[in-house]
Amino acid sequence: MSKPSIYGLTIEQLTDWLAERGHKKFRATAVWESLYRKRITNFDRMEEVHPTCVSLLKEHFVIGTMEEHVKQESVDGTVKFLFRLSDGNLIETVLMRHKFGLSVCVTTQVGCNIGCSFCASGLLAKSRDLTAAEIVEQIANVQLHLDAAGKGERVSHIVVMGIGEPFDNYKHMSDFIRIVKDHKGLAIGARHITVSTSGLAGKIREFADGDLGVNLAVSLHAPNNELRTRIMKINKAIPIEKLMDAIDYYLEKTRRRMTMEYILLKDVNDGTEQALELAELMKPRKGLVNVNLIPYNPVDEHSQYQRSEQDSIRAFYDVMKKQGISVSVRLEHGADIDAACGQLRSKQMKAAN
Image 1 (tube, rainbow, N blue to C red):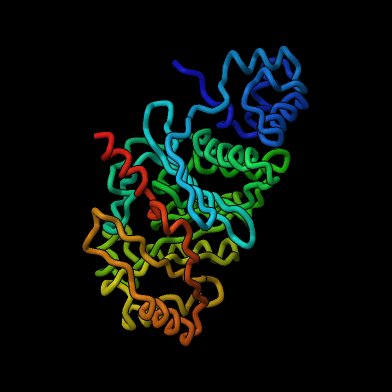
Image 2: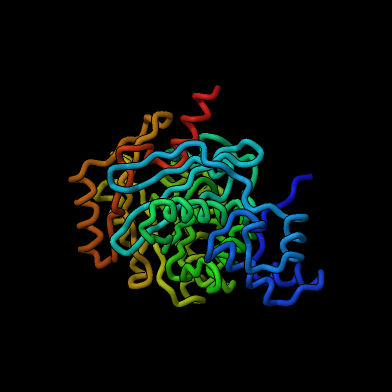
């Protein structure tokens, strides 16, 4: 059996593991800082870690298990990475440039079973969850890419919105967040991390009860059950009423604002009627929810859906504003590369076949 990646251990788990083998707490801190502050990718180069500790780590762990397979760079600075995992599976990770910093969108599963009818991520069914180590390594590899450029840039924000449903891989996703938040390592602030879900109500409640302290975004995409069920099959099991109950629980428990994501599909969910209906749904949560309107990136396999016209996007936005709802339009990134989540992976796999 192959050795696990050390990236999968939280600082507490690493400390306990070393303590059980006779090493003091400060050794774990030295290893942690070597991994995440100095970005060392070879145990033998951990010069500030005692040799006996290095030997022990080499015996039981590896540093990283994936390799870069394809890299696409956009004129706007967006970089899309396709990583090959140790079992041959491919996953996507995206680096985006914002005025507020550098954000990375990470993947949590190989494929997706949620089955949104407009999404490239679900073109290939889920084959497995990613480990916490594989999610952390996406951030580590992007940071190494930035380090190689020599500009002193660092990943400052994370969105857990790549391929897969993060709440369907809750344990590994949670460990990932604890690892990247740790102040002795990557030190990415909780308020700079956002987790997106398609609406797993039970996990939203668990998330509210937890101690992660990061932001929540929910993919709604339709203001009523009939339409949402048509484009998102998860709505059959978790209708809007049940989802909103969980969201209200989250808002009450955490007293934190959240984001409602809404992809605009031409002549499907982008009309004035849907805008007014969405506004009514949001009014009881006014001041606590921001609706983020997302221009659609067309996917060849979902040709029944087209991008909304700019006039329709503007009109939808104006209706929401006039109804007093906090609303924004997502800034697009990487329009000249495979922009839709899962698109690059799907193309590469089809080419290989």
